[in-house]
Each structure stands twice: as structure tokens, then as C-alpha cells.
Length: 196
Image 1 (spheres, rainbow, N blue to C red):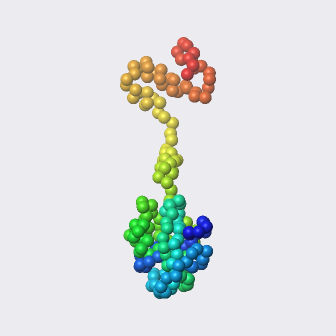
Image 2: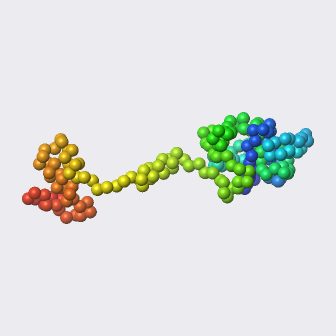
Image 3: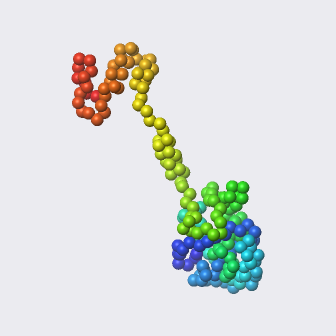
């Protein structure tokens, strides 16, 4: 909210049935309020009476943690309403927020979060969208954990090395079977000791 930064979480309703956006007076009591025409609004959350406006600066961290929004909102007590802010069509259209009932998600500027019940709390329903690099890393880890590891069939591997002569394939097979990657001891290879 404009004024001193306040990191307190508030509960917000995205209301496509409301033409205007509203904020609970308690949430903006320290900000400069401007007198406005007394109006009663009908919203999905219930009727709202307002007589003031306020310029509000806030963020929607479930979409973008650092992106801020500044908007003039109607201020009311929002009694009988279970939300601290109602984002109406004025702001929904300006931000191009897409409420998708077909997937029960809300999309804004490429970020998508699931819809929540009105009883949802920050503690049990806060959604954090993983970055593409984190999703990619998690998928790599999953593939590694799901992989089936078996000892290599060294005879088959060396037999498929058709670019080598038969003697070279036999030497390679001997080397692969007797090689110890963790030893500094020379390997006896034919008549000679060879460091690998």
C-alpha cells in the first residue's frame, strides 16, 4: 500500500462481476483517503458501501514477487465480506488478468496460479510458482532417480566396436574388466605394466 511499505498479507478476491476495485478501510487507514460519492456496490462477495477513494500500491507475490501495482480503489468497511481487497473489472482488464474457469486457474502475464476457496489462508494455500530452471532441474533429478542402473555388458560393448581389430577389441575388453579407476597401481597389460 502507498505510504510506508507493509508486508502484511491480505486476502484478495478477483471479481469479474464487480465493475470497480475496492479495499477494506482497515487495510489503508494510515494512507491519505479522498472523499468520494457515497455508493453501494453489489459484488459476488456481497454489498459494499463506499464514500472514499485511495491510491494503493500492492503486489501479487504468488504471480510475481517483485512486481508492484498502483491503483486507485474505492474504500469501504467491506463488512460481511471475507476479503481485504476486491479486484474488479477495471483492474482485471488493465492488468489483462485472465480468470480461467475451464482449468480453475488465474493467469497474469504468463504466470498461472490455481483458484482457491474463500476459506483459504496464507498458511495453507500460498502458491509459489517454480522458475523454469528449477522445474528443469527437478525433472533431471527425477530421470536420474527413475533410471534403471545395471552393470554394463562389456562383451557386447566391445563386440560392437567394429572399427577396432579383433585384437584391439580383446585388449579393450581386458582393460574394461580389470580397470580400477580409484587405484594408482599400474595395470599389467600383456607383458608390460601400464599406468592408466
